[in-house]
Length: 106
Image (tube, rainbow, N blue to C red; front, side):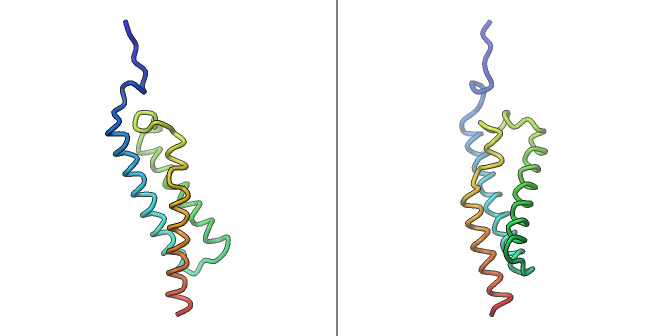
Protein backbone atom coordinates (compact mmCIF):
# COMPACT_ATOMS: atom_id res chain seq x y z
CA UNK A 1 0.00 0.00 0.00
CA UNK A 2 1.50 3.30 -1.13
CA UNK A 3 0.75 6.40 0.92
CA UNK A 4 0.75 9.63 -1.01
CA UNK A 5 2.05 12.75 0.64
CA UNK A 6 -0.01 15.95 0.53
CA UNK A 7 2.49 17.49 -1.91
CA UNK A 8 1.73 14.73 -4.40
CA UNK A 9 -2.01 15.38 -4.17
CA UNK A 10 -1.79 19.13 -4.82
CA UNK A 11 -2.83 20.57 -8.13
CA UNK A 12 -0.30 23.07 -9.46
CA UNK A 13 -3.02 24.97 -11.31
CA UNK A 14 -5.17 25.37 -8.22
CA UNK A 15 -2.23 26.50 -6.10
CA UNK A 16 -1.22 29.00 -8.80
CA UNK A 17 -4.80 30.30 -8.86
CA UNK A 18 -4.83 30.66 -5.06
CA UNK A 19 -1.54 32.57 -5.11
CA UNK A 20 -2.87 34.84 -7.87
CA UNK A 21 -5.99 35.58 -5.80
CA UNK A 22 -3.85 36.38 -2.76
CA UNK A 23 -1.68 38.70 -4.88
CA UNK A 24 -4.72 40.59 -6.14
CA UNK A 25 -6.24 40.91 -2.65
CA UNK A 26 -2.98 42.00 -1.02
CA UNK A 27 -2.29 44.72 -3.58
CA UNK A 28 -5.89 45.94 -3.55
CA UNK A 29 -6.02 46.10 0.25
CA UNK A 30 -2.65 47.90 0.31
CA UNK A 31 -4.00 50.50 -2.12
CA UNK A 32 -7.23 51.00 -0.15
CA UNK A 33 -5.40 51.24 3.19
CA UNK A 34 -2.88 53.68 1.69
CA UNK A 35 -5.65 55.87 0.35
CA UNK A 36 -7.46 55.74 3.71
CA UNK A 37 -4.30 56.73 5.60
CA UNK A 38 -3.73 59.62 3.23
CA UNK A 39 -7.31 60.86 3.49
CA UNK A 40 -7.37 60.52 7.29
CA UNK A 41 -4.06 62.38 7.46
CA UNK A 42 -1.90 59.79 9.19
CA UNK A 43 1.79 60.57 9.02
CA UNK A 44 4.88 58.78 10.24
CA UNK A 45 4.60 55.68 12.35
CA UNK A 46 0.78 55.84 12.60
CA UNK A 47 0.43 55.15 8.90
CA UNK A 48 2.79 52.20 8.98
CA UNK A 49 1.06 50.78 12.06
CA UNK A 50 -2.24 51.04 10.20
CA UNK A 51 -0.66 49.16 7.28
CA UNK A 52 0.82 46.48 9.55
CA UNK A 53 -2.52 45.97 11.28
CA UNK A 54 -4.27 45.63 7.93
CA UNK A 55 -1.61 43.14 6.78
CA UNK A 56 -2.05 41.06 9.95
CA UNK A 57 -5.83 41.25 9.63
CA UNK A 58 -5.69 40.11 6.02
CA UNK A 59 -3.41 37.22 6.96
CA UNK A 60 -5.77 36.20 9.75
CA UNK A 61 -8.71 36.29 7.37
CA UNK A 62 -6.84 33.92 5.04
CA UNK A 63 -6.13 31.55 7.91
CA UNK A 64 -9.75 31.63 9.02
CA UNK A 65 -10.99 31.18 5.45
CA UNK A 66 -8.83 28.08 4.99
CA UNK A 67 -9.94 26.66 8.32
CA UNK A 68 -6.41 27.01 9.69
CA UNK A 69 -5.35 24.22 7.29
CA UNK A 70 -3.31 26.25 4.82
CA UNK A 71 -1.25 23.30 3.58
CA UNK A 72 -4.35 22.11 1.74
CA UNK A 73 -4.47 25.25 -0.43
CA UNK A 74 -0.88 26.55 -0.54
CA UNK A 75 2.61 25.14 -0.64
CA UNK A 76 3.65 26.99 2.49
CA UNK A 77 1.90 28.54 5.48
CA UNK A 78 4.50 31.28 5.52
CA UNK A 79 3.34 32.25 2.02
CA UNK A 80 0.12 33.66 3.44
CA UNK A 81 2.01 36.03 5.71
CA UNK A 82 4.87 37.19 3.51
CA UNK A 83 3.56 36.94 -0.05
CA UNK A 84 3.77 40.33 -1.80
CA UNK A 85 5.02 42.13 1.28
CA UNK A 86 7.38 44.38 -0.69
CA UNK A 87 4.99 45.20 -3.57
CA UNK A 88 2.18 45.70 -1.06
CA UNK A 89 4.29 48.10 0.98
CA UNK A 90 5.27 50.05 -2.13
CA UNK A 91 1.64 50.30 -3.30
CA UNK A 92 0.59 51.41 0.17
CA UNK A 93 3.25 54.13 0.31
CA UNK A 94 2.45 55.40 -3.18
CA UNK A 95 -1.28 55.79 -2.50
CA UNK A 96 -0.68 57.04 1.03
CA UNK A 97 1.46 59.93 -0.20
CA UNK A 98 -0.74 60.57 -3.23
CA UNK A 99 -3.95 60.92 -1.23
CA UNK A 100 -2.25 62.82 1.59
CA UNK A 101 -0.97 65.34 -0.95
CA UNK A 102 -4.32 65.61 -2.71
CA UNK A 103 -6.37 66.10 0.48
CA UNK A 104 -4.03 67.96 2.83
CA UNK A 105 -1.57 69.87 0.65
CA UNK A 106 -3.44 70.89 -2.50
